[in-house]
Length: 299
Image 1 (cartoon, helix red, strand yellow):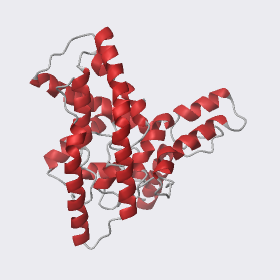
Image 2: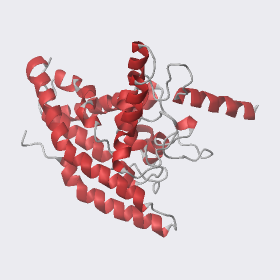
Image 3: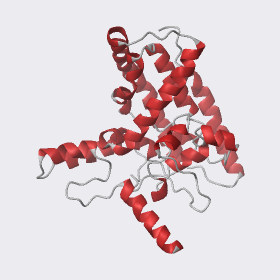
Image 4: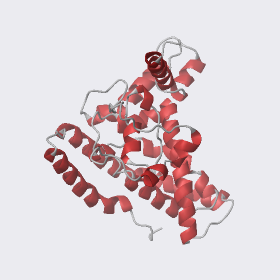
């Protein structure tokens, strides 16, 4: 395990330098860089890195347990296995990311990353304080199939580092072949949009092919400028409120008032916006209304 470096720590100087360069580029375009918002994102990123020393230890123990006791194969450490792992890890990431938008229990931690109404490199650092302790279950298939836990954690770090640079408005569109295969700033701007047409789209980590394959891809439209943030924004720069407010509201919905046990459980596993009395509005509902309105205008 000592042969696998902690890439996130090595990447921190690169993150910092990139932030300064982007801020300078934005300033040159006579646009504003929200300092309070950026500092909030950076603070959340710092705490996330510190908590990762604990959460990654838990993840590693779980991966090693599955690998040592239940693995179906033994995949050697070779160039081809790292190539295979690149796609396998990204496939796992896609489903983790997609379900994090469709199940409120996972959304409670993932919502942190979407809470900023700005979109720049600092937004990439706005990471969960709780997700690292339980979202790793989406990757348990990898040690089961024989990938060494050290390889998996290394590749997870590679994926996280790749996704840093796509959090920017300073890059418009890249060559068509790159946009067709990889996650890009344009694709990921869509993912951070609160516009109905953009909600719950482009869950890719590195490869956009999964969204195209499973029907969750949406191109960035010239006529529909991305509005960043949440359908109902948190409106705070307090890191603690950002980290835990959705947990509070989810648990309040689940355990307060008169409702059946089934309804209480459904508040944990149904999508954000779901209400037991039918009054809730989901992302799918908002997208459907938007499409109907657009079609009515065109007709």
